Length: 267
Image 1 (cartoon, rainbow, N blue to C red):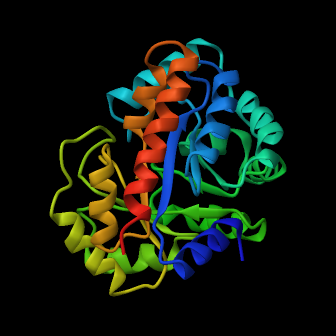
Image 2 (cartoon, helix red, strand yellow; image 1 turned 90 degrees about the vertical axis):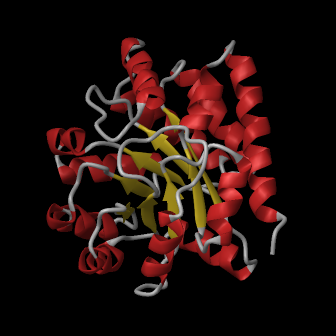
Image 3 (tube, helix red, strand yellow; image 1 turned 135 degrees about the horizontal axis):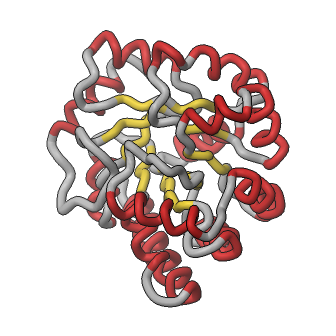
């Protein structure tokens, strides 16, 4: 059983919903990222998603795009990210999922990339531009290293495609709540409930909902609808970027605590 699977198993036994915050590595700098990982870990995060800054982040909305641009302007590279993770990961309870586009993986070579992230202590991968049809070449070697490749289900996915993605996804299934890019939204669409019901009918794997969760009540809503995890990105990235690094760290600590409280205190 992988680190991510163990995390979900423990939460399910306690009838808890996982909180998975996302931050962009290198924004505002790599040192603050290291501190942010520890702050999130101590503020209720069950799993942490760490974005590798990329020059053409097609799945990301303006908040995360801007964070990636700032990180790249600071000179942040994949090597910097993995060096930092290797140092910080032993201090964390929460497993780390690396969010990266496919091109950096291909550029480095799948086997080399997987070996390097495994050495750094990474537990899982989200590759938003990797379609199901091309995922097998990454799933098998990743699985052999006990790294979970988490696949995404879109609101536009057909029933047959949902079944295929659910079968192939490792660790959990990432349900994209809206058609489009990441971002802060005022409410969760009712189609999320229908999609959760549909996915739960074909698999017993955990389901995490992301793209658009920006308030504690959103996290509570998806939990009540049957999600096993609430994934929160832009709302955290935005808070971390405001003010000084110290102010940003305090802001994400308070917000993370409020999110976890919302999904922890309900039956």
